Image 1 (cartoon, each protein chain N blue to C red):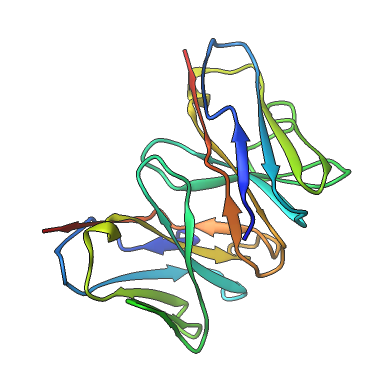
Image 2: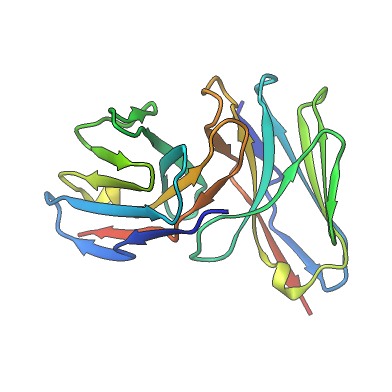
Length: 114
Length: 113
């Protein structure tokens, strides 16, 4: 299994600002993903972070709002841009070897937007 | 129909009880299946993969019925520490490409003394 860390673990931000969340994996992985978990709900996939190319976004999520980088096989960032209170959520990154294999999750970033 | 649907719960059971969770998925082309466990304010953690032949890990047994598109998790001799939300997770469901996970809404289990 992979060990995944995220920074920051939590933040409180003002509306209109942006926050970049970092995700670091302790080993090289094929796939990295970003999820959102809103209060009392399950996880929703935001996008697949592709190494060396643009991320693949799920329906309802766009690059202008959630730009993602993945410069190498162990690191990715998610930016939540021009935040509003509706963006208050937990953001989790995950990693795995792709295909039918399981994914392992980081501890999450708890974001509150005032 | 939701891509992955679970028993709504919550389940409240005494220590030592046996409890079963059910899950259905909509895409017959789904490739692999998992149960994750999520404790309050924590990230999901893999509990077990689910194989067509069924698999067991200690007190936990998972079953998959591809014909009925149905997954189950059985917990025997429940412990207080089993209290958590159990997430049914499907790989490749709902037309998404292979490698992406779709999560059920989760079933809350509380084991009481």
